[in-house]
Image 1 (cartoon, rainbow, N blue to C red):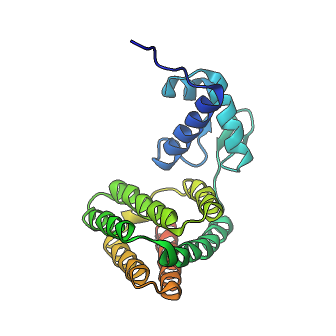
Image 2: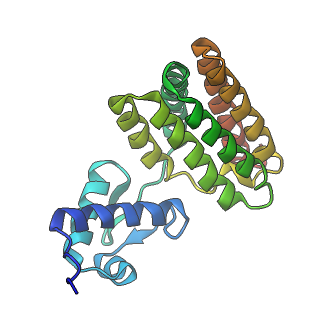
Length: 219
């Protein structure tokens, strides 16, 4: 029986990077939490070398920040940064939807419809809704058929992982977002690039409104 092939240092570093990012997205590490090499290595079951490499990459991307006497900590986004982040999301998601209207196959549209149906049914499970929402948008990125655009939106998605909680904790948001997804899908199905872009922009604007509401519950 052949022994499993050992991962290269680059592959270990990349998988560790993704694992830490997933832990931030899943709320295991919260904004402001310190990250220590030894603790992260123990939790992930890897040596400290790939952890050190991953933490360095995360800090370069602004997902971690220097913490006095604590090494690094998960970055905390200011309200201004949140507005800037959503402004970029509007632009990029709009372009993605426009490209998808040009290039999506019927099979991709059918798959997106199935994902959205599962998403719409996850009204009582915000974490599952968030996972399905990411899957839905990832499949639209695939359908857009533009590697550079996809890289841009994926980089943005990494920063979105820093936002505390998911907007789907707000009652009714999952159902509303599912309808917004339908509007995007209908435009893609009809090959109406302009309508697809407008629907995607509306979707992100609505998400920002909910984000602000859950960030300032007393406002």
